[in-house]
Image (cartoon, rainbow, N blue to C red; front, top):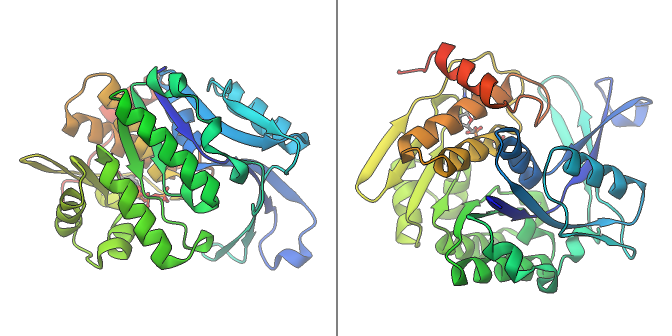
Length: 314
Ligand code: ATP
């Protein structure tokens, strides 16, 4: 196994028409889960990935399982929980710019994830453990499960990559800050956005954000800068990797694709800078489609895109 992760994947429903959702009659369904988005990106590039989770023993759980399995992600450590439902998410498109998200994930099957669900041997076999700040926000047992996975990763020298992925709707802010900083301190590589740096350290500048994460315990910090690319800091190396010029139509999922690109590059033995460049390419590609995973490339699409696209050197 190259990379394992843990978290929740929901079924999302979005009205086909814009406006207040109370008038919606037709919905489009999709799957929503930051961790499985990143695993899908890695799997499309040929890496071996695994997902630890729970789904409800219900129809939506069956659809999540077959979707994730269909993307080539190992689901042998996903449990069907008969006591709780699979989570739902609704996206209300008030207009092109204004989207409201409603979660129906409290007491969901995945929020029942427990430390005992984490198999030590499964983590030990991986090269990387990928965690986000979403899973620990779901419940105290999820936070304990994340900590358990981290403990096993450390014990077996499995590298830890952490995307803080702040979701303010899911938890109280001071608690979020404390937990996210605690997890970041245990990670080898942290992938924050500027907004997360601002939330955690009250600084907006990417150089200051990186410094604060390193003071907090991380070895490598790669700060995402949207269309401008990313800022990479590891030891004495400090590099701005420019973004790729694309016609972006939907930014959601870019960060998950970016993580897939960085991890894929590291698995392939690229330098840190080249791995971040791959992350920037995949992040940019994801923004050119309206879903979270539709723009994730296979090897050939990625190579063509990187060969043909222009990086923004401004
Ligand atoms: P998400 O919306 O998934 O939470 P994020 O805030 O974590 O995303 P972003 O900075 O939006 O992360 O995007 C991740 C990476 O994707 C960026 O570092 C950049 O390389 C690439 N990217 C994002 N938006 C664009 C864009 N408009 N044009 C080109 N590249 C982009």
